Structures are given as structure tokens and as C-alpha cells.
Length: 96
Image 1 (cartoon, one colour):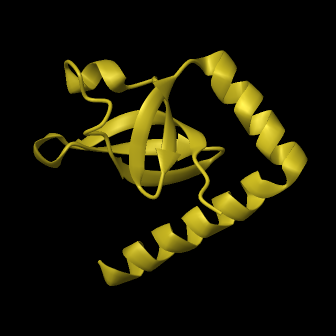
Image 2 (cartoon, one colour):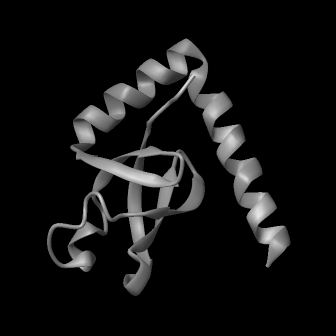
């Protein structure tokens, strides 16, 4: 199943490559922000986005993010997605 999950942009990590750090329920992951970069990149810090396979696909507001996370937790899918993201991040860190 393809799953997009809300994440909050917390830092711009590589402006040239349009990369940022997103926090998804406590799991931090670098994501590509090309799809949501429509102005100064620094303006994205604190914004919520729908994250899918390492890409911030669209902006969402904080209320929509909270409702989506609640629904995903209720369905049990959020934990599976977070574990997959954490495993992917750990694999990337091992390669460095």
C-alpha cells in the first residue's frame, strides 16, 4: 500500500538540492521539497506536508495533519510507516 503521512518541515538541509528535514511523529527524515517549494525555502520551516517515499508532495495545515495522524494511528498504519521510515533512515546513516 502506498501511504502518505503528515510531517513537519523542521530545517532546510540542502537548498541547492531542495532537501529538508521533516519530523514525522518523532522520526526525522530528509525529504525532497521540490513539490512544495513555491517561495523562499526558509518559509517552509514549521509547515506541514504530506510525505511519501522521501518527497513532500503537498502542503497541509496543522489541523488536517493532526486529523490524518489520528486516523492513521486508529488504523494501525502509522506505526508501520514510521517503522519503515526509521529503518530507511538507519540504513542511510550506515552508508555515511
